[in-house]
Length: 172
Image (cartoon, rainbow, N blue to C red):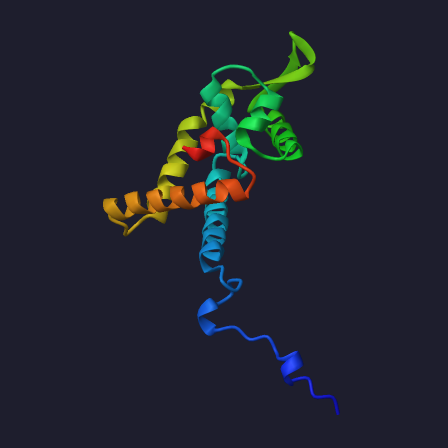
């Protein structure tokens, strides 16, 4: 008979307070869960506007620019994988929310611009995000909200170097 419970092959056990978090990573686990839940809730709310999660981020940059933006600059601004942004832009173009055209100054580059149809969504998107934030922070006092914002910004700053750096927009 083979005894597998000896000191050399002790079974892995974890304290119950760790739950499903990796050992020593409860805060990271909670941040990940909160981010996933936030994305899911945002996705559900955005569907009413005919958008998929992430499309509002791309559109937001285009709305803020107020005119054509090089696709390569947009990819840098939203800090997503180029193939993800390309797929997002294809969907947005098919739905009439953006136009893409060669840059007359450099035919290799592509200019992306928000359409009037998408601009009509900007207030809806703003309302969705404001409502989601209010729901997520329900029950927190203004002081709690300020403290949460301060703490999350500190965590983000701590992680920037570990992640290979952060853009100026992320650091603010």
